[in-house]
Length: 296
Image (cartoon, rainbow, N blue to C red; front, side):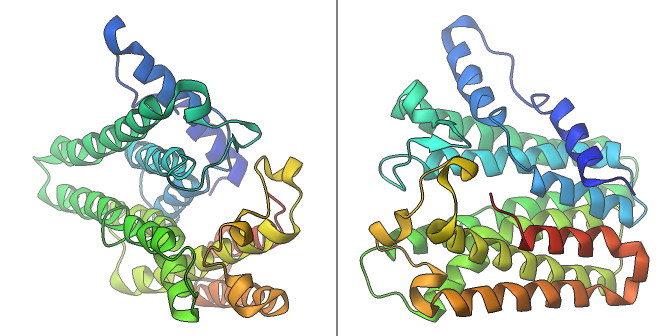
């Protein structure tokens, strides 16, 4: 398997491949979509998809369109999250948010465009394998995994709970629901989709699903911690917003000490879920440990 940076470099070198060629009348849409895609980022989700596929013996070239689609979905969600009607952020990764550069209407359309491009990609890719029913089935499963976890019972459900949970008493159950769907679903999707593309068995899928869900929840808890303790300059966005907006934040409900303990517990559990695979799965265990100590 490759290193995280090698996967990340592959993603970055193909980042705009799915963007449409548009006439002058709507060229600004492509420009706005590209602006948020190219502002930077960890590329965690597409890297996980490529790594999971390669771990299971799959072809990363075949998996690349799905990995890009996931980054498009993630980016669209950030554009919409930053809007005044949502989190109302001025900065994303140290640069002005999309609506600050292109206006609210174009930011909404840029998010819509990224989601549409992702959907067109993942529904079109399986058609390339119409003469190979087994391969086509793997691709259809992966496509459905991505779109369903990004959809109204997945990420959007979590975002809805996050928005409607503002200014009301947060509960542990509500916080966990938001973590599982707003964040963890879009981390579980790439891991499962990558394995599906490679035709993984149910045992492997089950173990990696536990890993990915734990990783996703831990990722969100650390985001909650960083909103209190993080450096805004390093994060590239404002801090303290969860408390100011009365968000359903893990730290607000459970306290900082409990949040850090749960972060560590989930990280250990994620690593333990893959213990049966030994060194072959070291990429994923190492990544979980690295994410536990991130500062951005």
